[in-house]
Length: 248
Image (cartoon, rainbow, N blue to C red):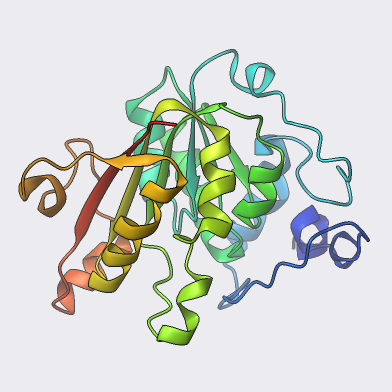
């Protein structure tokens, strides 16, 4: 059995570093009991897939990760909150010339991803089992060529909208990590999240690339529908696909 404290993100000591900014995490870190196979994946595979020293306890000076060493100089993509990991593995398998980092604090999702990585036998992925904001702290400026934000928590209540990722608090650090011309993809089934994204993302230095309705109504050519999208479709919600490019 793997203990969550074995992963730096889940170590109580990691959360007490004096210079770590206060960042509330409002979702679950763990759900139902892990299967024995998932515990094995966490114990045997997670450490080897680490992108490097991310957490505040192991990297209090916030030294940037060496992505060239991690991925052999390949372009690097980032998925923020990969859920069960199906899209992340799909992109890795389809783009072997790219290195992809996935960040996800929900340990059950991390365990599901590790199983998918074993089965797909992809070797161009790195996995951070924690808050993407901590990861962005240690990504060098203009180091990311593409980023994905897919079905993020919508925080539907108006008083919770500030917790959404599409706020300047999160978008500005993300933009700093992205190369000029880099692409940001956002998928959501919440119309008000679309509204907020279209208002806030351009403020952080991006332009929306839609030229016709199909550009936000139809998925990308290399899209793999996730479990979250399938749930939205079953419940009658309409997916939206937003593509932005960093322009400044």
